[in-house]
Length: 356
Ligand SMILES: [Zn+2]
Ligand SMILES: [Zn+2]
Image 1 (cartoon, helix red, strand yellow):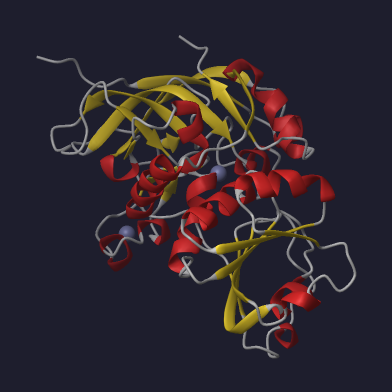
Image 2: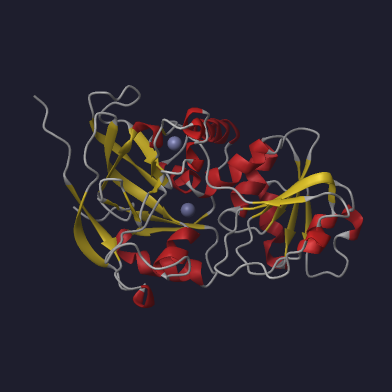
C-alpha cells in the first residue's frame, strides 16, 4: 500500500504587513486531502506583484496571523487521490493563483472557474473547512487536479513558473478579446505582466504596439516582439493612433494611467482591460472618457485551466518565456520582494527550493 499524502508543509511567511521583509520559517497544515487532489513537492516559485500587494497590506489585512505567499509554482507530483485521472506521481506540474472552486456552478462548468464565487486563492485565503491555503514559498502544496497543470517538456521549470500567474493573467484577456492576425493590440506597461503580454499578443498573430512611460523599456519591447514603441510621456502620443487599436491591455500597476488618451485610440466599441490592480483606485474615471467611441473599460481575473493549457502549448511552440532577473534561493525571498516593490525587477524573480 502506498503511504498517504503529506499532512504539513514548511514555508517562508510573514506575520505583519508593516514588517513584510521579516520572513520566518513555519510549519503549516495542508489542505484536507480529497480524492481529486494532487500533492506536489515544490521545485521553484515565481515572485508576483500580488505577493507584494498582499504582504504589504496594500490589498487589505492578512487573513491569518502568518501567511506564506507565492502562486507561480512548479514541482513534482508526490501523491494523487483515488479520483485523479490526469496526473501521475513523479510528473512535473504547476499550480497558479487559484486552488479551489465549487466546480458545480455555471461558471465552473463553462471554463470560467476563475470567476467562481466560491474560489479560494492560492494563499491568504481559507478553504471552506477553515484550513488556510498557503502558497509556494514552501515545500509542498495540494490542490484539486482542476488547478494543477502539466508542464510541457519544452519549457524549463523556472520559465514555466512565472507563466502560471503573470502569463495567464494576460493570456486570458488577450484571447477572450480576439487577439490574432489582422488585429492591432496596445500593451500598456512592460513589467512582469506586460513583458508576457507583448510576447503572447505577438505569438497569437496580432500587431503589437507598446505604450510605456519609460524610454528604457524600448529595446526590450522590440526584443519581446513589439512592432512599435510609443512613449506616453510624449505630448499627443495618442494622435497618430486615433481609431487604430482593436484592443488595449494595460498591465500598468499605477494609480494613474493616461486613460483619456489611451481610450481615444480604440476603434468603436473597443475595450481597455486593466490587469494591473493598483492599491489606490483610479480617480479620473468618467463616462465622458468613453462616449466619443463607445469604448469600454474592464478588468479580468487570472484565467481558466483551458486557457493555461492553451497558453503553455503556445509558449512551447513559439518559445515564449520570461526574462528572469535572477533565480535565487527561497530564503532570499525578501530581496526579491523589495526589488519588485521598488520597481527594479526586470522582469521576474524565481525562488528555488532550499528547505528540506
Ligand atoms: Zn463554481
Ligand atoms: Zn500573481
